[in-house]
Amino acid sequence: MSIYNKINTGFSLGTASPVTAGIEDVIYIFNQDDFTLTYDTTNPLIVTGLTAVSTAKIYKFEGTNNSFNTTSKLAKTSVGPRYTEEIDFNVAGFSVDIKTQLMAMGYGRVCAIAVNNYNSSDSAIELFGAVNGLILTDAERSAADETVDGGYKLKLTNPDKLREPYPPRAISIAPTSGGATFASTIAAIEALVG
Image (tube, rainbow, N blue to C red; front, side, top):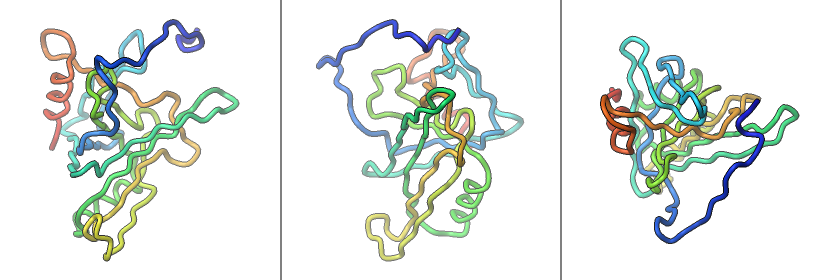
């Protein structure tokens, strides 16, 4: 029996820790088949471990001035709710190396980690594309676009007809000793950055 077919608690919005919109100007991206995900045994919405296959790395993309955004949209289907996940970000540049990475994201599936500006939540750090991965669906470059200095505007989203069965997963990775914290989770991700 699913744990998601009955509500079991309420919530309220308060002023003690107000929600802050947006994500930090960093996105971590990795090839979907390069990592094994470990889920919390009682809640599949929580990723408790990222294990590299062989010498795989996570790649860090950094931006400025709120140039990154994430979106998760619920879609009702005949088999239950599904989620379309999107990540919009900019790359200031158009070198051959950048174009090579864009091609790889268009052909292969990746997963992406975003860090919310509001980090007083157990979903402060989220994983997108956990089940079906993400692919690059938009890569637009206008040489005269001053907002990205002639660089690329990019969108990662689910492959056609492959929405995610869950909303973006929370990532919560504990250190060697003690419980998981925001800092321990960031440290675990940064340790895998190549």
